[in-house]
Amino acid sequence: MRIVHVLGTRPNFVKMAPLIAAIGRRMPDAEQTIVHTGQHYDRLMSEIFFEQLGVPAPDHMLEVGSGSHAQQTAKVMERLEPLLVEDRPDLVVVPGDVNSTVAAALTAVKLDIPVAHLESGLRSHDRTMPEEINRIVTDQISDILWVHSEEAIRNLELEGIPAERAHFVGNTMIDSLVALQDRFRPLGACREFGLEPGSYLLVTLHRPALVDGPLLFDAIAALNQVSTEMPILFPVHPRTRARLAGNAELAENLHLVDPAGYLEFLSLEADAGAVLTDSGGIQEETSYLGVPCFTLRDNTERPVTIELGTNVLLGLDPARITEIPVIVASQERAVAGVSAPPEPPPLWDGHAAERIADLLAAQGGSSV
Image (tube, rainbow, N blue to C red; front, side, top):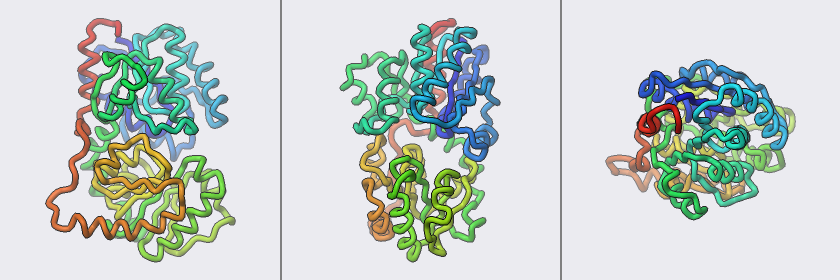
């Protein structure tokens, strides 16, 4: 079997690393090609993930860079098509919900090449989110849908997607986390910033609705207030840092730092007293790690984290950030004396990639 994996952003690397490795073990004769679209191109935010996750160097770099949604999608399609025409793989694998995902799926399906979508069926039910459109379109045109949570199966059924196309395999992002626990847990990365485990609020904000408008400064004002009760560590995307430079007053206990490598960030996440985010993947990681998560969005495509009780949806309302210390304290009182944290969702067990590799191997021969 000849497989092309198309990756574009940091979370894509984390989701795909265990799958690429598992296919290599289960199907040693399979030919795997990695295409990096370059949708995220800053080294600190991209290449370091290849180094730390042990993913082989990409075979092709499309270097699409930044741009509007239409520009990124068009560039990926234009630059990927000749590669697929030349290679004619048996399967194109696309992870997640970014522009690279839908662009690669569209390119492959128009060439009559089967497509597998990793992390399919997630829905925020908010079509103003570009990622939601990417998810819906990719699921509709993909031949194989690898699902990581039970509500995703229901979402696909409601959209009329035949059940035989969907396979409940689990969460490959958790596979990466489980595989690297022995490496990130001893790091104590927070101590590099003078912080103690369990004492601080870790912040990641990157969505345009938050960081490209006035809500960013409202969030900083709220974080300044929270920092009087608990120190805050905020690894900042370069674009966000540029917007804040000289335009926002930062409290002494609000630490803006450079983006961390994957292992260092997992260490910061595991040792945090709580996490504030607008990222989908971090909602999942904190749920597995048992760290309280607060999501600064009106909705989430990971409702399983809300049901688990590890994630609180604050809405797109920076003023609610000030509630975090009170909620954390009440949660700590509620779990006092409880012997174990909540169990992770079904199949978030570190073996999702192995299940996918088994499914592919069961296809037999060279055609999906």
